[in-house]
Amino acid sequence: MNQILEELWDNIEWEKRKVNGKKQWRLLPKYKVDIHSGKYKKKLRESLLQEWPYAAHWVDSAIKTAYSIFKS
Image (cartoon, rainbow, N blue to C red; front, side):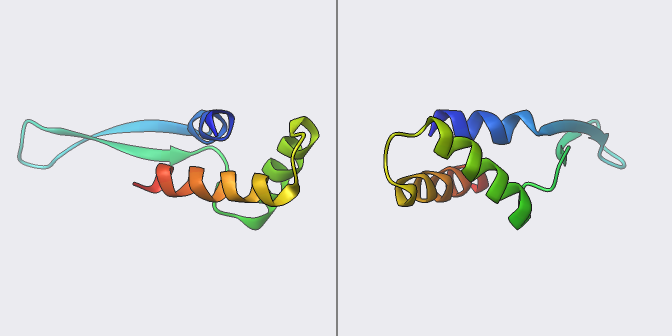
């Protein structure tokens, strides 16, 4: 799980933008790759299966859980 989350976080750059009319700044995520594409998810799954001694459905479950953690 940690490896998946690290992979997702490594593909994000944070862009700092000023809020108009205020002294505040916002950090907005800027993705290096499209982490929501099926192609990226397949590549991530294949890379994890090489190091994963368990069944493939456990990898799929871990990826799904990592994406839901990442989304929240």
